[in-house]
Amino acid sequence: MGAEVLLGLALGALLLAPPFLPPYFLEILISVMLFGYLGAAWNILGGYAGQFSFGHAAYFGIGAYTSTLLFLNLGVTPWLGMLAGGVLAAAFGLFAGYLSFRYGLRGPYFSLVTLAFAEMLRVVAVNTKAVGSSLGLVIPNREPAAVNFIFAGKLPYYYVILAMALAAVWITRRLERSKLGYSLLAIRENEDAAEAAGVDALGMKLRAMALSSFLTALGGTFYAQYFAYIDPTITFGPSVSIQGLLQAIVGGAGTVLGPVVGAFVLTPVSELSRAAIRGRAGVDVMLYGVVLVLVISFLPHGLMGLRRGRGNPPRVPLQ
Amino acid sequence: MDTRLSLLQLDSVTKRFGGLTAVSRFSLTVGAGEIVGLIGPNGAGKTTVFHLLSGFHAPTEGAIRFKGVSVVGAKPHQICRRGLARTFQIVQPFVNLTTLENVMVGAFNRTDDAAAARERALEVLEFVGLGARRDVPARALTLSDRKRLEMARGLATRPELLLLDEVMAGLNPTEIEAIIGLIRRIHAQGVALLIIEHVMQAIMALSQRIVVLHHGEKIAEGRPDDVARDARVIEAYLGART
Image 1 (cartoon, rainbow over the protein chains, first blue to last red):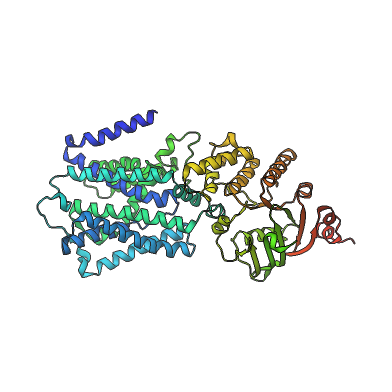
Image 2: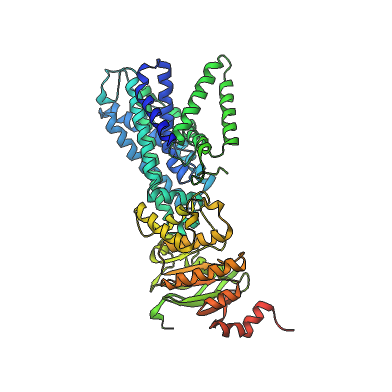
């Protein structure tokens, strides 16, 4: 039960400490929560169903652009725009997923197709004037208004993304104990054997896809509101896709807390190495890369693999 | 056998892979609650027949009916839902899941509720003798236990017909004896069985009827002792007398 006490303490600290943190740490914490959230969303499809998407930027970008365009052009509050973006992203995810799964794309082929879909959207955004082309979209400074998802100061944003991350963890916990969760794990382990045991592999993978892309899109809206600026490279570029999956893999893909744990390790490493090594561009990225290589070499089941005992087997063997 | 009563019916089924004919004009019936053995030398097409029945392959020609309804074109999970489950010759456990979780996946075939699936899975694990291994990851199971797990996962789906593909291969005589007992108990629950097996004394003892495949064609069918004396069967297994 030590783990539950520890989780309770961590949760208490996440709820109570931020008002007293200096702005720099609050910013890092917001990044941690956003990446943890994106990792959790990716984890549903990548960690549980074992379908390694390299293109979750597609859903992130759809979320960011949908809510921002609705807000700028029609004055729709981003809170509603967020849901619209989620639904649109889920629809796109179902479309991309159906095309891939229906024709039996597995493993790296699936990954490549998702990457291609995200790149396709990026190129479309770059070449479409109505969405700001490569210049992107700015949410002009306006009066803070909670109803418009615009807050004074960073603290409210922190609590929004904290709530989103906790919700994602809660959804994952529910998923893990449901028929869908078991079906996804079975598909990840062995799709043919799962089918033979009555698992509708196509239907279950599409459900995972829809949920994962919906959640990822909400993260896109958060990003747009927090930074008040989006462009095609930031939102549809490969780095968003990779950030999401890195948190999950480093923390432990196919585990409930893995993505959040991963974000708590990776984000500070990235920030600290950037702060420590100024003036030599790229060295911090190399350091970050070394940490990744070490984690993946020595902890193939991620950080969560460290605390797995009997009856709690590691979930994802990385090939 | 009266075809109206048969659970499974294959009519002149042929499966070709390019130029290779794996199964040729093969007909077979399995009645409700029957145990039928499917034997033949390596490469005879037995596993291909299982793949055809369970929806992993579609026949090139011919009809396959389960409970009077064609299963041609149905996906494996749809066939499983209708009550036809199978095991794999090369065991396919979900190695990173526990024994219990493996069997729960099968139990979800008949329920959407996790608690009900867990209950059914525990019941099946006790039945096959894996109750004590429920929390062990499947990768840690012995071959003998993995074979039991295959059967448990199939049974958890509540089949009316269970296809067993060499569940005794690689086991020692004591383990084989135990599996024979398990198969009898499965049968006693009213489940019909179609069994591929190379362990002759086992298949002869279990089966009410035996079908012999050779080069994809049925060369004999009948009661075990008659089939064992059949000249074509002996020739297929031992080669022609010179």
